[in-house]
Image (cartoon, rainbow, N blue to C red; front, top):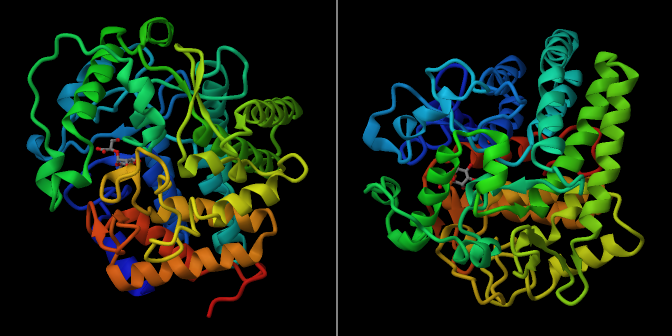
Length: 448
Ligand code: 2M8
């Protein structure tokens, strides 16, 4: 299985960066790349470091890490919206020199977590690897700090500790029912005609977002473009502005990773103080998102001034942030195992469906509306281990490996049948498999 995972990553390797998937995603995606780097670290520490550094080379002057860095060699008809559609982003004084072009959106900030993990793997792999990783940490630290500062300022002007996203794509969980209400409120204006390219790469259109959703996605891109990708103008005009609990939880954990990196590279005390304050602000913000009735954390629609009620796996995301208030960890682990998630009687295997089958927005085939995603499971597994919930973590890891062993390195899977869906040979699926198979020796669980 490890060999196959390695083959997938090698086949998608573009020399310095990795395609998210062979056909459906021919470019470099931000959070995919970070998680791919986690897997690559098991093959080659220096290649893993390059993966992240290639992405960070396209960081904007504001500190923003773009959600896509476009592959100049990908045929124009392979992905929409592609580099031409985003070319205007390069006119922003904040954008890096182009080509390659980048999008002007963001994705969940898993990068410091990945950098830290590369470091952990390398420091167990001998002096040479450790040296390579130490130099890497020194190079990426200022970039990661600038990225987190961007998120804590431009994306949290209210100082709430929670990240605002301007597009469902920024959440990484694109068509999740989390965004339904906020998207319904978006009025789509005059749009130039466009042709979706994604549908040609999947077996059935029901695996991808609907046209209703896509028109809104493209309108929201249009609206960022009309604001010239300028932070102040986007903030003043974007019709979709939501505090995202998953991204905000990831940022807390990423800030903890950054703090360790800061210590490792001997960063100034003021940096450490800033990072510590971001961590506590983040945790306080997440606590305000707790919904007693649903027993989940909820995203918050800033423009409508209301929480977005949906039962999705993101409602458990503060597990990723860690250090929950007394009793909350136990409660969330219980919720995870409840019939709304892992304990649902119709599940093929006890793996977290992206949306609870009990939620009215659940659809078992449709992208982030139900299917099981290996990378989300990896994040939960990683968080459960950090929290000392070793038994739950072990079960998740083994069940996910069994699922992928049986059905291949798909992008996502039908939670009721295990059928592989979306892209085949998805890079980050292969990456998390490699990480799972090569667990660090110091961890309590041993590989069987
Ligand atoms: C999906 O998102 C892209 C847009 O960014 C798409 O649907 O075209 C999401 O699953 C996202 O989380 C992921 O990073 C990306 C590439 O795997 O695909």
